[in-house]
Structure formats: C-alpha cells, structure tokens
Length: 227
Image 1: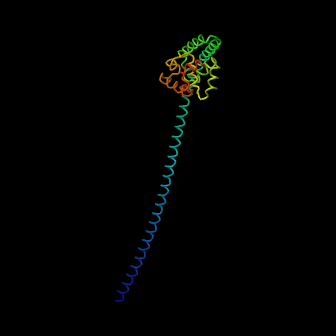
Image 2 (image 1 turned 180 degrees about the horizontal axis):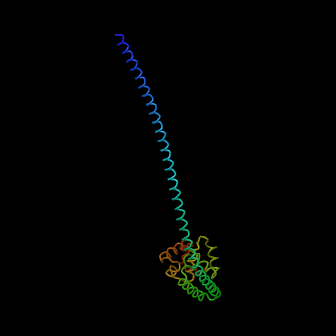
Image 3 (image 1 turned 135 degrees about the vertical axis):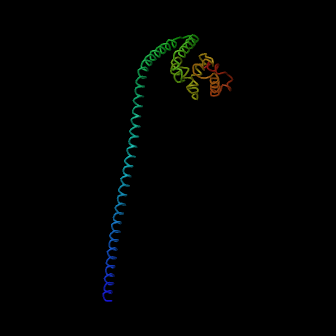
C-alpha cells in the first residue's frame, strides 16, 4: 500500500510537471505567435506605406508629363503660327507697298479736284473718283471714318459748318450729308457704304429729324444745297 501510494504520488508529481511544461510551451508558443502577428502587421503597414508613396509618385509623374506635353503642344502651335505669320508678313509688305502708292495717287487726285473752281465740274470729278475707289479698293470703303478722311479735303468748309451748326450729327451722318450734297442717289450711297438702300433711307430720315427739317418745310437735299 505504501509502495502504491508512493507510485501515485510520483505519478501526480510527474503529471503536474508535465502540465507545467505544457503550459509553459503553450505560453511560449502564444508569445511567439503574438510576435509573429505583430511583425506581420508592421510589415503590412510598411507595404501599405510604400504602395501609397509609389501611387503618389506615379500620380505626380503623370501630372508632370501632362503639363509638359501641353507646354510642348503649345510651343509647337506657337511655332506653327509664327511661321504662318512670317509668311503672311512678306505678302502683306508687298500689298502695303502697292496700297501706299494707290493712296498717294488718290491724294494727288483729291488735290486736283479741290483746285477746280466750277462746282458742277468738281461734283462730276468726285463721282468718278468715288466710283474708281469703290471698284479698285473696297478696303478703303468699309468704314465711314475712311470716307470722311478721304473727302474732308475736298470741302473743308462744308464739314466745319455742318459740325458747328449741328453737333448732334455723327461722322456717318456727315458723310451721308456730303454724298447727298454732292449729288449721289440712295442706291449709289448704299454701294459706297456697303449697306442697303433701305438703310440709307432710314438714316436720311433720322438726319432730317436731327435737323428738324419737317418744321422748316424743306427736304434734306434742298437744305444742304442752301447751306
């Protein structure tokens, strides 16, 4: 019985020691598992950080590339436009030179017409000159200011008197008045001013209102002739 009891006690001690060893091994395993898990999390964070950095770098490279590409395309476009302008510049130089000569001829013609003393002869010459200008250089006839500059020398007194007596009249009104005074019809004036005959009629009506011709009981042509 003593031997059996001793055997049981030894068995119990051995079981307890074995349990302790197992528990210690389990604790060690758990500790190692935690360390490994922690390492995995750290590695994941490192990898995630690297991926984010790489994506940022890729995005930056793409943005820079697009910006650079736009600048290159813009430069190519400007270079192309510059070449086109340079080509046109040479052509324009020739055209301008010819136009300058043409304008000089017109000025010379204007001085000759201004020297004519007979009013009817002067009007006829002016008509011929305008028709020649319209046929040869429509560029000069696009704006009323150009007309005014061309013909102002022909009858400075007319323009000065009209401007001082009727300051409400615009440059366009003055040129139409001068055309009427010179003897042009609505259709001819519309051709010179590059507009419609109806537009000239409407402008004549507005000029008549500005000059209060209805109250005076005279037509625009009669009023300008008297003036």
